[in-house]
Image (cartoon, rainbow, N blue to C red; front, side, top):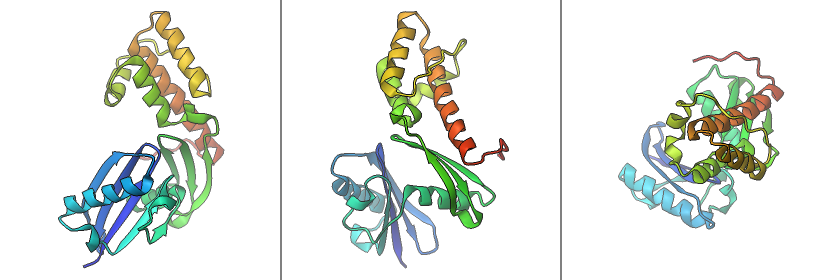
Length: 214
């Protein structure tokens, strides 16, 4: 039996999945990214192998993707995150024609061809205000757990707009909302709305026609 490891060395986290040659998921790992992508990538592989009940030296093939994909010295192949997102979406949802990949550093809207190939894509160009990293800044400033942002957002009564395309300026808007006595829920909901609006704009640029299947 062959073992294959896929490692996503992204800006915010490093994720690894170990599968067998039948495509069955045997083990996974998830840890924060660090400056030394090679080192954290190796640790992530080791953790996923432990979860799978095998040794790292048992892995026959390693594919890397993400921001730090070139840094993993043990890789057999590196694949762009655009290609991985497109192929992964097609594998799970063969009828999908668009993919929205919202990461810590950037958000990518992808239009798919038949077979899950990338037809067109757009990436946010205005720093972290259009990505998950913006929500991390919101959570830090408002002193709420990142994992609680979704629940808190649903409690909003009067969402406060955040219009800046720069994360630093958007943070200034948040400060203004706080000084005006706006609730944390309304500010968080406004942040989510801002992120969603920018993501929808990117999707429309690659041809999204508002049809969504669930």
